[in-house]
Image (cartoon, rainbow, N blue to C red; front, side, top):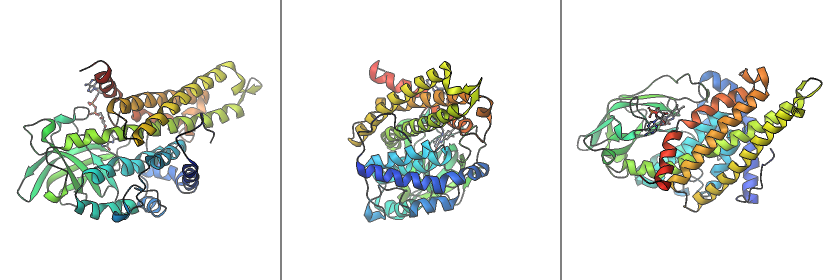
Length: 387
Ligand SMILES: Cc1cc2nc3c(=O)[nH]c(=O)nc-3n(C[C@H](O)[C@H](O)[C@H](O)COP(=O)(O)OP(=O)(O)OC[C@H]3O[C@@H](n4cnc5c(N)ncnc54)[C@H](O)[C@@H]3O)c2cc1C
């Protein structure tokens, strides 16, 4: 796939890795995606294969069974290539495990938790989720109701979570709970909960507008006994940890957004060259040329800003406002690109078997999760306008 602009943040080693990722996706992901969409989930086997091929949790230190590759650009390449392929379910579920859940364990988990779960996450034996959202609390996380009552050596967890990515297949979940319901943010803690714990049940995967190969579902906790050893970090610090990791989560969403926009742009360009109307290819109409020119310009700007943000993140300098800007601008662009590309496909654009139909449906949620784009604007305004 052609690049929109020279990618100065990557080296030759990164390019070699990119080619191996592309190869893998072409052979192991693309041929299976339609079947996974029908099943509303990928297979467990696909996770294990990814692990065996070294694409899961590459940043896990060798001491915990990983490769200890802490250069985030490799993770970025993996997400980017998955998204460019148009297999959006896998492009969301696998990176969530690698780059969104694992950091909680690595940055704040105790030794025992790391020893137990990092090797299994890296091999694909354990699939991970993160559960913050509740039926009555999404943007307003502090309003969550899920409680973890202190019972001495363990917590008793009651409540439910909803819209959980990887929820149906997950073996473990980092769950945000209220250890002190009388407090707001300071009453929130994070627990590593195991799906096998008694009283932990799951709903059926939701039938979503898009991301059909993603097993998004509800999680229910009915008097689940969770050992104090499963507390991530310190009690009452959960909200702080969430805020700490959300910058990377939002960057990952941006990486997916630009990758998906690029992927569908090139497919649409090809389609407009091949489709004829009024005796010529539709790419020769001025409207088509101008639409593609507009989209190419906007994608080039987004790619440039995104690579800059990835470099800032690698240097530990990506702040909350910048992460929000990248998430907001790139996901809005992804939806615009998908919509314009669908229009250029005419009626075929509305048929599910066409990549552009899926790109259109898959794009929409990007403006909603990982913090809605309205919340992103709030966070940006806080920096530039004040509280
Ligand atoms: C497919 C999918 C996967 C998801 N995966 C996960 C996951 O893995 N883990 C997880 O914990 N959650 C997940 N979510 C949940 C997601 O993060 C929430 O849906 C999102 O944060 C919005 O919360 P909500 O749905 O409760 O909407 P609400 O918070 O009720 O928002 C409704 C509307 O009000 C607006 N609004 C709310 N507050 C403000 C404000 N202060 N200013 C301006 N506008 C505001 C919102 O922007 C939105 O437009 C997922 C959701 C989906 C659909």
